[in-house]
Image (cartoon, rainbow, N blue to C red; front, side, top):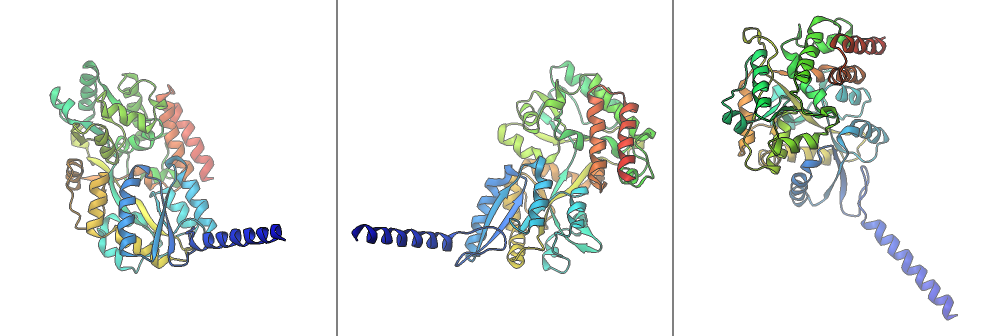
Length: 416
């Protein structure tokens, strides 16, 4: 009898423990605990985790009935993972995405809640959020303003008496001087740089501002002179040894570390890497420059910009009001300034006070003539991939015309 009583008491205790556990657990999108609603915030910027954690603490203190659970996916697999998550209706209430084909795929899948009539739009610079629009609706809000042009080491340039070049011959001469003095002129990473470096390389070569988009429409071809010329110029840099050894085998983090160690003078990424580099080398002085591939008199654009890290609300979220409240919090000038100055990211939000040298440097480019990133004008990811592979092929030793023909065949296959 005593054994049976002990067994019953044990089962009662176990059951009560399970029930208490269920009552206090905060789970994914669309679910709530006894006293809080949990929203999931999903993005790919692992380097911003600490900054977002501090901001989330402040948000939860101001909104005690909302809990924010942050999930960070790897950048290389983010698009596939976030699309699957959103279509499932579980695990994402607020999410970030990139412009171009990434945004196009998600909006075609119908995952965005419409933000068109929300007051939050007044917190953003109107001209910088168009990348998040489709069919006359504001579906996502670009949060970051990025310049997709190489970062350069000002100290090295000053020591060697170099200035950012204003034409192609000048760029080649700068690279030559850097190499002769023991520096890798351009640090290139196989996972990031093909999709980044092509943008400033193409901006003054292409016949129209949206040439890549015209390629996917069938109105332009990658075998035309403007693209073959661009590949030839990339080949010229590679053949002269202006990229580091095993460039395609170098990862983003490795290239950034080499740049922070001052082994190389230019990093073929963008302004978004400046804070990461600074954290590894607080003494480094950084600037931004773009390779100008034409004579100075023929230059149309000085650089490339992108409005990215586009924040959206899932249309399947049970807590859209709470999700929007979190984005509004991120877009408040005080919190936006905290995020910007902690992470080194220039933002599309109005009235933000920037206090870091890197942001001051990026801010100078607001006055320059820049083109929205050509690669993000492509709406088909397979076309974008074909272009990136052409760059990789040339660096691997394939002749520019051959690489262009191969890429155009893939484009033809895709658009048919």
